[in-house]
Every structure is written in C-alpha cells, then in structure tokens.
Image (cartoon, rainbow, N blue to C red):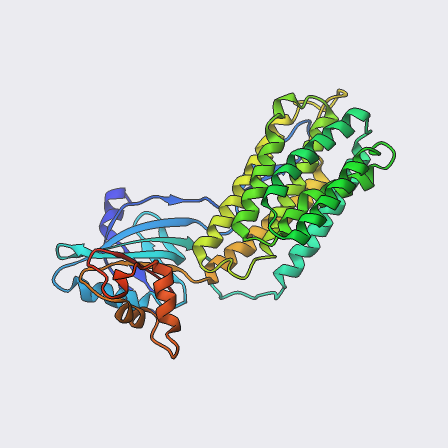
Amino acid sequence: MSWTEKLKKGLEITTGDGKKYFPLYKLTPKVTPFNVAEFEFPNIEGTLVKKSLVKGTKLNLEFYFDGEDHLDQSQAFEISAKDKRPFKISHPFFGLMTVQPTTLEYDPTGLSITKITGEFIETISDEYPRIVEDPRNKIAFDYENTQTALVESFSANVQATAADSVKMADNNDKLYSLGSEAVKSGDQSNEYFQIYQKANSAVGKLAADTSSAVQYVIDLYTYPSLFVNGIKNRLTLLVDQLIALSNDLENLTTFNDKTIFEMSGAGIMSAMINATINPADDDFQNSNEVIESIETVLGSWNFYLDSLNGLQTDTNDTVDSYIPDFDSLNELIALVNFGTANLLNIALNAQSERSLILDCDSNPIILAHRFYGLVDGDATLNQFINQNDLSMSELIEIKKGKKIIYYI
C-alpha cells in the first residue's frame, strides 16, 4: 500500500471504555527514547555496543475535533480518556498500537475546532500469564549481586599499584566533594563523611587488600542513593558525579586506569537504580516525573557505555589492552534493564497529566468539581489550587485562555 493510500485511512482512537473516535490529525513522529545499550562479547578480539529497547515507544499525537459540535466531541473524549485501561490507536503510518497517555492537552480556543495534543507510551496488553515478583526485592537482590560482581572482577583483574591508590583517592575526593554539598540530613552527612574516611583509608592499602578497598569505594559511591532527598535531586547528583569521573577519560591509558573507571562508573549506575526503589513521599506523583527519571537513568547508562566503548582497545594482546569485564557488566545490565522496566511500569500506572486551555472565564470551585469532584474539607479544591499555583485574584476568577493542569 502506498503512503497516499495509507494517509486516506485516517486516525482511529479507541479509548479504554471501548468508544471509538475518528479525529482529524497532523502527522507527528514516533520516537524510541527508552533504549538500553548493552555489550556483546563475541568470540573475537574486541567488542561492539548494541542498543535495544526496554519496553515501549513514545508517540506524540496532535489531532482535532471540528465542526459545530467540536466541544461536545472533545468533552466526550475527555470523559472517555479518564478510563484507566489502555487506548488502541490505529495510525495510518504506524499501524495498530496499544498505548497509555501520559499527557493530554485540550485547546478549544480555535475557531470551530478543538486541538488535542498528547504523549503516549506503547504498552503490552494484560492478556498474558503474569509472574508475581516484588520488583523492590528483586532490584535490591540484583543490586547486591552487582556490587559483589564488581568487587570480584576488580580484585581478579587488577594488580594494584601505588599509582592506582592515588587515582582512586582522587576520585573519592571528587565525588565526595559533590555529594557533601547535596546531602541534607545531618545524620547522613556524618555517616557519609565516615564512609569517605573509610574509603580513603582502604585505598591506601589497595595493594594489600584489594577487595576491601573496592567495597569501601563502592559504598561511598552508592550512599547518595539513600540521601533524604527527592529522586530527581539524587539522580542529578549521581549524574554530576559520573560526569566528574569522565572528565579525564583521554588521560586513562593503562588497563588499571580504565578498569578503575569501569568499576567506579558501574557503582554510580547501580546507585541510580537503587535510588528508584527508595523514593521520598512526594516522588513519582505522576507519569511525567517517572519518565523523567527513566530518561535520566538511561541517558547516563548510554553515556557510561559509550565511555567504555571509547576506552576499549582493538585487540587484547598487549599489557595495556582493555576490554570491559563481561561478568560484572552482565550483572549491571540485568540491574539497569529490570530497574528501568519497573520504572516504566510505574509510569504506566501513575497519574497522567491533563491540561485544558479555558475557553471562558471560570473559578477554582467549578473546575475542581469538574476534574476531581468536591469532598468534605475542600481537599480536592486545595489540590487543584496547589497544582495550578493560582494567584490571589485567580482564587476568585480564572480568566479565559489560562492553561489549567489536572491529573487522573
């Protein structure tokens, strides 16, 4: 079928309640941001980096209800879109997709037209056997396995020297300097300083007791995942620490230098995943926040693996040849894959954002009742006011044209 024939098919949206809508639409791209890079280790010298998908594809849509009844059509769609079950979208170019909306924005201010823009994540149907497994327990288990593998790999492959102790101590200083500025709790600040001192003391004896030194270093690098702070702030800190480690990649010329970076970066990556199972009370309030965390983790993961790929040598037959260790990276790959897949599952089940551009003047009471319903104690009214950061004057009247945000 030619592209012109496909174009004539139009867009069909079946919402979770089973109702079908056939709006006009604008062609928009389909993107695949949730890509995880992983190493392949063929039975030849050297290796390649291959990128694959975690779970879903992201689709941005822009479509329109037109005509005299466009407001009725858009309001009917708005009601249908509140159903938590997945949408079925039959796209003329991308085919049939099962998706969940993460954001929808309604703009009825046009002349005889309502524009709806949205972001959707492709998901799989629920019609398959499920194995119940506590993701928190599995991630915690994989996290411990990853740390053990990192210690064993480094100890087995590195003959430590005094120069390595200096290098690791320098890394400790860089990362602790960033972390100490970010820690909020006084108790955690004290504990973090003690871990830092233990790590520096241990790397001074690196050659004599490599395993203990590496374990203390990993403890230092992963402790920020437990900071009493929001997920976003913790991930931002860990990204900054990973970048700080990567600033002198071009100066890492020996096998030991490169392996120190491999171990250190892996420790930070495992900390990112560990942070996701230790959320603060106000973390992951909606799907957008979760998706932002996914993109931060996977952006760092791909950056880390691209860095390792740049450090690799073409062959493995000289003293300074370097190829990343398969066993420890394999554990880390499993941890990152499952951790990000769990986040994606959280995103699909979290509240999704809706927004509406008012086509007439209104007030918070009417809008809170429309979107949430009113309850005793005005909880939903206060929720609506806080989500939209309303000014004093807007507590009385909200003017036409203002963008209103709510969640379902």
